[in-house]
Length: 524
Image 1: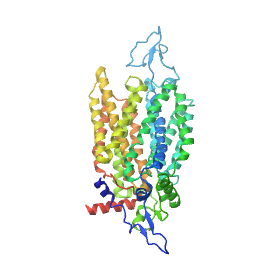
Image 2 (image 1 turned 90 degrees about the vertical axis):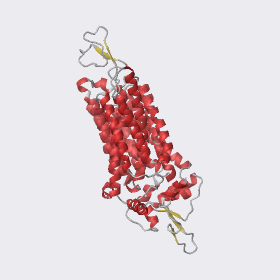
Image 3 (image 1 turned 180 degrees about the horizontal axis):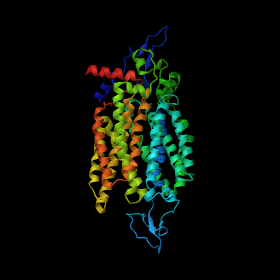
C-alpha cells in the first residue's frame, strides 16, 4: 500500500505550489486538479459516482443489443425434406445447395424468421450475410472516430451519448421495416455508425468522475453491462424469434434509457474544465461532495493539471488527433493501442460470431458465452491493481491465444467438436478480460483534451478487425481458430511496449502529461 502512495506523490502538488496567497483576510485560494479534488475533498467513489456509473454504463447493454442482434437476425435455420419431396437427400452438413426447389423447407418459423430465409441468403447468396455484418462494423469504425472527436470538442460526452442513442432508436426501428436486402444493408450501416459512438462516450463519461485509486476497478466493471446486454438479447430473441419483431424489441431498451436514465446523468466535469466552463465543473464537484457526505470548501478552485503547477497560468487546451500524432509519446501509444485493439477485436468478435457454426442450441450458446465473460471481468478487476495493466493485459491475451491454437488442432466431429467448443469458450474468457482492461488502459494513456479522440481511433482499429471477422469465421474451423490464436499471441507481445499506468493520475492536457513523463525519465 505504501508503494502505491509513493507513486502518487510526484503529480500531487504541495500546498505552497497549489495555493494563492490570501489577501484582505480572505481564505487562501487552493488550486486543485480534478484528481486532487476528488481525493482530498469529494471522495473517489461514493454514492454519487456509484449512481452515475450505473446509469451511464447501461449504455453498454444497448451497444451489445444493437451489435449482437445480427447473430439471431441473420442466422440460417434448420431445414428438412418435404414429405414425399423428390430429389431431397438429407445431409445437414451439405445444406440445401443443389436440392430441387420445393423438395425441402425451413423449420421453426418459415421464410420470415430470419433475413437468410426471407431473402434466400444461402448457397451462392451466402456472402451477403457476411457483407451486411462487415458493413455494420464499417459503420462502427466511422462512428467511433467521429463521435470520439465530437465528444472531446463541441458535443461533450453526454451530448454525444444522447445523439447516438436517438440514432440507434430511429435506425433500429426502421430496420424492422426493411422492404429488401439492400435497404437492410443501408440501415445496418447507419446503425453501426451510431453504435460505434456508444461505448467510447459511455465509458469515458462513467469513469472520468472516479478518483485515481478506484478508477481501475470501476472501469473494469463496465463490461459486465455489455455481457448483460448479450444475455438479455438471447432472452429477447427467444421471445421474439422473427427478425423484424426482434429489431423492434431490441430497440425498446434504448428508449427506456433515453427517457428514464439519461436525464439523471451529468456531463463530465473534466470536459467542462477543458472547455473553460469552470463554474459548471465546480457545480458538479460540489454535487459530488454533498452526495458523498463530504464538504468542499469555498476557497478551493478547480484547474487543469498544468495550471495547478503554474499557479493558475493558462494555456490553450484545444487539441485533435493531429496533436496526438505530433507528440512522440502519444503517437507511439496510439499506434500500439490501435494494433492491439485490432488483434483483440478479431479474437473476441470472431469467437462470438462463430457460435452459429457449433450446430447446437444458438440461444443457449450465446447465453453461455455471455456468462463465460463475467468471471473474466471479475478476475481482471481483482488483479488489475495488483499486477498492473501491462502484465495482466499480456497474460489475458496469451491465455486466449493459446487455447485458440489448441482449438485449431481439434477435429470437428464427436468429442473433438465439444473440445473445440470448450477451447472457444476459454478463448472468449481470456479476450473478454483483455477487452475490458484495454478500455481502462487506453483511458489512462491519454489526457482529457484528446481522450475520447484517442479512444475513438483505437476503437476504429478494432472495428476494422471486426469487418474482417465474418470472412475469417467462414474459413475451415481449424484455420479460423489458428488466426484467432495468432492474433492473441501477437497482441500480448505488443502491450509490453506501452508504459504502466497503475495509480497514475488522469492528465488534462498533452503538455501536462509530457512534462510528467519527462520528469519521471529524469528521476530514473
